[in-house]
Amino acid sequence: MKHIEEFRLLTFYKFVDVADPEKECEQHLMFTKDIGMKGRVYIGTEGISSTVTWNQGQIRAYKLYLDSHPLWKDIPDIESKSSPTDWHQFTRMQVKVRDEIVALGKKYSSSEVESAGNRMDIAKFKEIIDSGNMDDYIILDMRNNHEYKLGHFKNAIPANTLTFRELEEKIEEYKKDFWDKKVISYCTGWIRCEKSTVMMQKAGLKNTYQLDGWVVKYINTYNDGNWLGNLYVFDERVSQQVWDNKTHTTIGECLYSGKKTDNCENCRLSSCNARLIADRKEYVAHGGFCSQQCADTGLETLIVRTDTSFDKIEYKKQRGIVKRYPELTAEIEAKLRKHLKKLLDWVEFNHSTSQKEDFVID
Image (cartoon, rainbow, N blue to C red):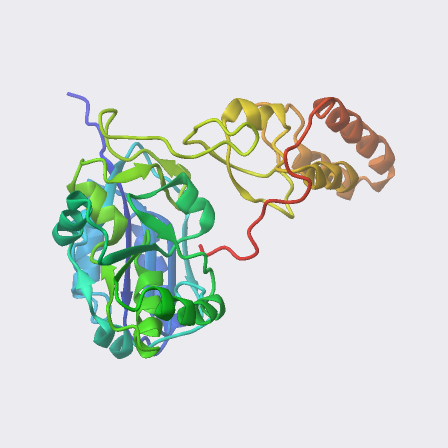
C-alpha cells in the first residue's frame, strides 16, 4: 500500500522573556531544518511567533523539541492551532530575530501580557453569537482591513487600527462609545489581541476580552456558519475556505467588478504589492494591477512581478539580462513596454491610485 503523507499548517506564539534571541534563532533554525520543516519563525525579546508546515513525523519531533525547551514548553492548545493542508505551504525554513514578534510599535513583557488575562473561551463566544442578542457586546476585529473584508465573525466590526499609535488615538473613542459594553477582540494569531488588550486595560477599558485560541481554534472546532467568508492566512494559500459548502458563505467583493469572490491576489507593481480581493478573471483582465496609477508606474519603471500563469513575459529574468548586458537596455525595455501596453489596451480601472494599505501587520 502506498504511504500518503499528511501535512498540517501550525500557527502559534508565546509571550516569554528571551534574553538572547540570536542564540535561540540559531538553535531553532538548526533543529527545524534538520527535520525538514518549512515555514517562518520570528523570535525576539518578547517571545516567539511561528507559522510552519509539517508531516506526521515532523509533528512529533517538533512538539518534543518545544516541550523540552525551557522557553517554548507549555504552549496551550497546540493541536487545535493547526489545520490540514495538501503540502508544505512554504518553500524554505526561515528563523529570524525580530524586535517585536508582531510589529505594532510597542513591546510588553510576558508578565504584563499575563496580567491582562480576560480570555473568553470559544464555547462562551459561540453562545453569545448564537443568541443573536448583541446589546451588551462589541466584537472587535483587530486584523488588517483586507483580512476583515475577506472574512469575519458575524456582528464583528473592524477596529481600523493597524498600529498602536492609531489604537492609542482610538481608545478615547472606544471609552466613549463602548463604556457600557463588553469588548471581545479577535485576530488570526492572537498576538495583536494580547497586546491591544494590555493597552486598552491600562487605559481604563476593563471590560475587554480576547477570544481564547483565536479564529483558528474556533473554526477547527465548530462548523456553524458564525464565520462569514474566507480566512486570510499567511502562507501560499492566502485565502482559506472556512467550513463546508453548507455553512460557507462568500462575502469578499471584487476590487474591479464588485462581484462576490473568495479569491485574493497581489498588485503586480512591486512597489505596491497591495493585497487585493479580486475575481481571478477580472484580475487577469486588468493585467494584475490594482489601479491606474500602478499600471502607469509599471509601464514607466517595468518593475513588475512575473506571473506566467497569464502573462508570458518573465520580467525579472529580462531585468537580469539588462544588468548583465547594459547594451541591450533600450531594446529590452522597448519590448517590455510594447507588451505591457498591449496587455492594458482598453483597460479601465475603478481606482485611480494605489490600493495599498498604509501599514500592514504580517
